[in-house]
Image (cartoon, rainbow over all chains, first blue to last red):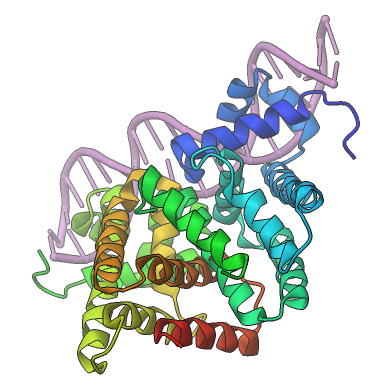
Length: 180
Length: 180
DNA sequence: GTCTATATCAAGATAGAC
DNA sequence: GTCTATCTTGATATAGAC
């Protein structure tokens, strides 16, 4: 499935970057090809249709997200809400605006809302794991939702927080997850 | 600015409904005109460009949201976090899937991310009001974020909750806002 | 103020050479 | 596996009648 790095990775990166810059509706195969440094023909060899490109973008985003969560899980000390803290750390502790990849979701949504199904399933898995391990499942899920809210707002560009405010909010979420 | 009801309201309703059904990228002027029962020429008389239509959609969404918040504010008893509770009630206590109007945001975002600026400003106002009245501003903002997360996930179609789970989460958020 | 054309162009996808 | 055409459609916007 992920054989040679080839142009595939380049194309997926280019597409994700472009959405953030020009809006999901203007994400054209021409623009993606140009940005990725391949021709439209070459692009369509790897992804036979625009939908298949968007599908791959969503899948890669979900895969990477879960990988970051596993990594965070391993380096975190034991304690209550370990999974929750891992998910929060994995998603929150990156530069606010460094979430270009997340724009993949918007492009997919704009083309065909059903393409986001893999993301919905990933959320289901995350919430199930978080709720199961927690002594206060409701609180844990609310904290997970707050993180999602912050991230989604940043993707949409509607976050009302400046850098310092964001830092404070993130702190508050993480603190609550530690049970303080 | 909002002179006669004319076709404007019909058009805005039709457009918002359509996004949810066919995806932001397929929201065409033809489709909007057909759904609204006007011709494309008639549509373009009211909204001289697609962007101006989307701009109006965003503005109306924001206005209605703040209006609901004011209404909720009036009917809520005094007590701690009154503004927060009003905002939460206004946004959460409607049918989960009855948020067609919210899809206006996605259509605008897909066309031009800058069109969401009025929404960002509205969030800024909301957060400022919520934080100012609260004795624990950080907690209040986290709860607001959780609500935003739930709503945005529902708009995107990535919410992992079924009806009963959603009810529970909403309960948990509202309870926390009451300081319990 | 609303309609019916129609000009114009952008974008997805195909065909076939290299 | 990547490229350069090219076909075809669909969508924005304009012009001008009613």
